[in-house]
Image (cartoon, rainbow, N blue to C red; front, side, top):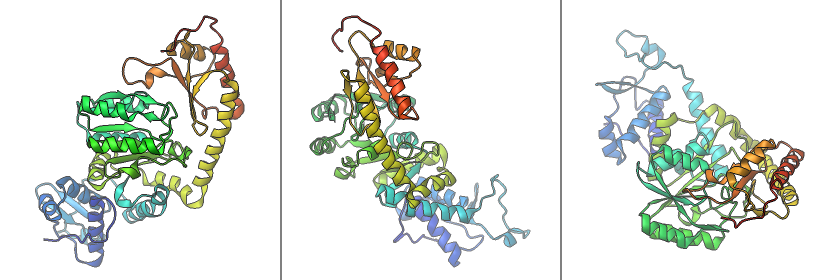
Length: 423
């Protein structure tokens, strides 16, 4: 039985098996018409799952190397000349004409020369996705089942709540302070719920802008280790705070790291990634394949070209500088209001005077032509604070931001009722 030579190859298992098929086709070890081993037999020999072999054979077929036939198996394809012979097998089941070699070369360039240096990650631990939301979806689905409980900050990213609902998961909120998750509250939640997955944002948490200190990160890592938690770390805004460290280096074997280039570079060309331990990454890759096969290599190549020529670094640096300037505008115009934010944060969490509920203030701002986020969209559970999130980057200019915040100030002054206690 043919066996692939995998020594020295990097990347997800399915891809390195497909690379081995490609190499042996080129060197003649695999010839046109040869039958590849059955999925289960090869999986047993290599010590991988049958799904991995299925994905490897699918990848080989995508490159134009193999063709599969129900009831017969998977065969090495021949050249055009060989395919024209009357006794050869010609696969006309796939409605696609692919420039396979160019796509394979492009994908190799994408992983090895562009994205990985930006992420400082090894290729065997990285899978590309269609943005951070897709990365979260594949990561969470890889480590949960319907009905499971996922722990999260008591105020968390609204997209995570929608995703949990879509995947039929329960979300339990964990109390926070100025640095984000409280270790004691996380310990209590683990004991009370027996949850095994935690979703969190240690750097510039959304919506509160909290940044974990080194001490806090070590405490959270200790709790995660104690209860064998799988941590899904959302680092979408981490580029704004490069001086702070992510959680992943402390517990790399327990962390699924999720990020994207949408916030740091350009949102229109959707590209994100998952960095995870090899066993988990294989399940993530299965989820990626099930939901979209693969991210667009053309869009990814265009966007990641910025990483090579320095455009990415210039954009990220400009965004950090511009965010600081916009924070100064917000603090000046909203002086006297109770703001929870960070100089590096692209958003402000504004606590409202007691005369306002969150929904009422959102309606008042909308009446003045300004849309803001109500706290209920971020709260885990029915209770939520009197607060709103203000995104500082949406207005295209600083003048536009000043106008928006001036309208916010006008809305705040609209009610001259005495303040009640903030909930």
